[in-house]
Structures are given as structure tokens and as C-alpha cells.
Length: 292
Ligand SMILES: [Mg+2]
Image (cartoon, rainbow, N blue to C red; front, side):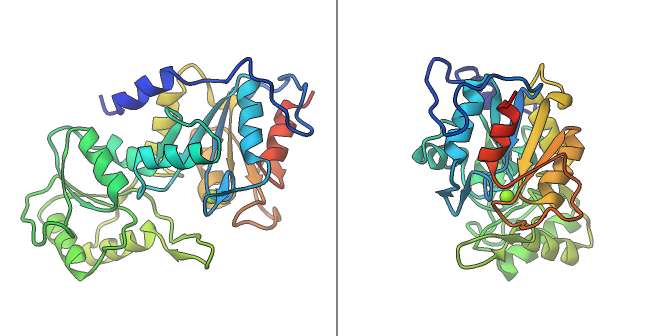
């Protein structure tokens, strides 16, 4: 069983918040005429920008849930822990426990209990590796940790340095499988982009000469995780909302669902982009999905 049992249990207590009136300009009194039953939402550029909610996003999530749709938050962030992601969403008024899928969870889903894993990543990745019953060895905490390792997993972390790279190289040379939580080159911040987990992964791939199994959006392990969390819902009833065509749009194709591009994040124009829905923001996507 590779899925985090805690997530499966947590989601049982979640669902649409029926019975609560939703007062959203333009979204009141709308009934569900669309076949969408699951809305997959990227976080950065859809729900918030640097944790500042994008106008109408919180109300849109409420309206979608009120209409009976499952809303899942699908993020390539592997640095924050599950509880930190839930708390951040809760702080802007979104109850997300049981509805968050991270690339750290996707990375852990390809591991097995009993594995010894060199975790070149942040707290979120360390936690998910331990949740599957693997041993997490953190190279920037245990300098010169000796092998063998079953896997090296790489995600965003600020402690990355020459020693971490050396330890990763040694572990892979001795047979460890190389796994990446995601391949995103940059991570957006209010002061402009900073290097993302994919830039660190690229250094490890270069040093080792190995291509990593990348698990986050837009890759299969994350898609399989979503499918397992949405049992009973087919891809034809899902829509992926995201601001990055190369990540979110490609993930929609991996899932086999529709892609709703929003222009509230990193992408400013829909020109030449393959998307079934294009809207300024999640609020407008919700309006469209909930309109007769
Ligand atoms: Mg985004």
C-alpha cells in the first residue's frame, strides 16, 4: 500500500460544505449543470500569490464545494509539510485537510517501507518519506552519511551545497534510484523567481549522469495519486485549473482531463496555449462551471 493512509482517512471527514449559504457576487443561486465533479486546483497563481489570496479564489472554492464538487489542491511544493500547507490554506479561509496533494507525497508514493533514502529536500519531503515507513537520511544534517541507499530524492531546499551534491552522487553511483519531487526550474516570490527544486535536481542529474524519476506535476506518480484520492470520479469529470501550461496543462493531459488556464499567475496570455477553458481567474472558472 503506497498511498498515505492518513490522507485516505482524513478525506472521509471532508467534502462539500452543504447547508452553508454561499454569497459570492455572480455565483449565487447557481445550480450545477456541468459534468465536472472534481476540480483540481494549483495553488501558486490560482489560489494565492505568495500566500496572498487572489481575488475571488476563496469564495470560488466555497461555491464549487457548495455545488457538490470535490476540490483538491495539487501543488509541486515539496518543501512545506502537509500540515503547513493545510494551515496556510486555513489561514485564508479554506478548509483543506484531506484535500491537499503535494509532489512530496507523489515522490513518497514510489518508495517502499523499509527503504533507506537520502533526502535532499525540505521538511515536507522528509515527512512524507517517513510516512511510507522508509528511513530518511538528511545529508545537510548528517554530513558524510554512508550508504547504501535505496533512493536519493531531491526537492527544493535552501541547504543544498557541494557536500549534499557529493553525497547524492556517491549514493547514486552505488546503485540508489534517483527520484525528483518536481522539475520546476524556478519558484515565484514577490521579489521575482528563485531557483526551484528542478534546478537542484538538474545539478544532481548532471553530476550523476542519471535521469531522475520525476514524480510531481505533470508526471504519472502525481496523476496516480490524484486518481486514487478521487475513486469513483473519471477523468472526464475532472478539470485541472492552473497558471502554467507546461506543468498544469501537461498534468491535465497526463490525468486525461480538461485544462483550465487562468491568467492570474505566471501566464499573461493564452496565445498558442492548448486549453479547454481560459479565464482570468479561478473565480471566473467557477462561474463558468456553475453557470446554466
Ligand atoms: Mg502555479
